Length: 347
Image 1 (cartoon, one colour):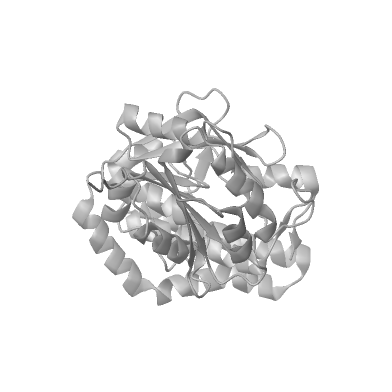
Image 2 (tube, one colour):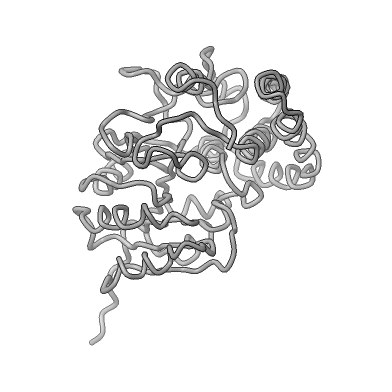
């Protein structure tokens, strides 16, 4: 009698675009997971041109729980991850990029925290790629601009309001909440999903023993190999990061929290003039400040449609969400980079 194998507990969805150098260690760390037999690995490639797909296939040779999906084009983070999620059978979904590696008990700890806390999503401890320096842990909440505020070490107010870099979420909740917003293309998708989790009455738990190492900014800031050695950004990154954060605020705020969008508009203009002063480039003012606002206006129909969807599953309004408000500045980590590396370079 044929018996169907049990469904995987976790589907790890690796969204890749031209990150071949990071793939072997990422996949090997998954192979070393204590619950590897209960894990499904889906490598979703956005039409990379650096041989990433072949590298992934070679690394997963003989894996009965591994699959490579070719998306056929660069669908962005949200689009590529949604394609991977559509093929996933796990009870939990874990969305990552290839520039990470997991310590052996990471997935086991994430599952345990999710099950024990009956959580919608779980936050791991994220450290630098090359050592144990903490890169991100939890968020205390959001500031006056709606930006996530990273928790101080030992903070008891930490809420994990934002999922920050990676999303470990129940598959049924991910689908109920509509998956990632593909209009974002890149940057801010996890924060957008985190807002929906809280608004819908969901819960984000913390798993401090789930240890994950992340290079970060591997495409926009490749210098230094495993360690970031400079503060570098790009006009394209600033455009998407700023536009998408504004979209998050416009999509999810009911009334009083729309003031964060007003404040963020002022911050965008300050940022644009900052770039103009230090770089003497009008294009930076345009792409970091003006074009994000113009594009949000272009997407006003999309915003209205998403607000209707949110209204259908909303359980918590703006007054409830104000419990996450912090007076500290969410972009303080960027200032710390300036102190460490000097003024940012534009790639």
